Length: 253
Image 1 (cartoon, one colour):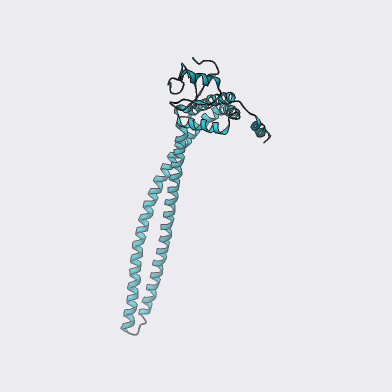
Image 2: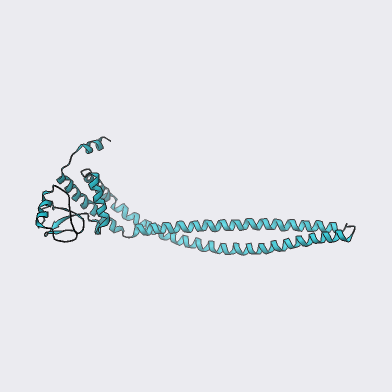
């Protein structure tokens, strides 16, 4: 907290801010180079993670559907058992009927229960076929997720290896980056970040080389070059919008 207060009280000159911007650009470019070593690995890992997560969700849904079919199967089997018990009871009643009317009424109840059994057994066959199909889908999905999980593990191991190898370097660059940012006000830093996002290779700050912009190589007028060397204000290239600075090493030609 004390460090932040001390930093806020420092009034850096425009030349110091411009130099800090140039240093920040060099640091960010070094970090960009390290990130290039990773190539498409971060995206590939993210894509595989999303794919595996999606497959696992699908497996959960299939298991839920199988469970639902099993529940329905148990329910239908209970209904069949109950219907058979009722048929048995009705047949016993038929032995004790006193007239044809009662006999016919019980016969209709028996027919109804037999129809219920027939419909239930038809549903049971459908459920069995559904469970079989779902289990095949489950087996296929589990095989796919297992294969993609192996691919993910390999990609993550490769990425983790690169990150572990470059971590000390990145940490040092990030510390340098933080020190450079301390000299740059928020508005200027926001402009720098915006330009970095919108230009090729993330070069937001470039030097003037051979009387031309180091980013787009368009010619810079002599008077504008004088203003750039004086460092009294931020000057951007009128062609590409990059921030122009004089090369601190004196390599401007």
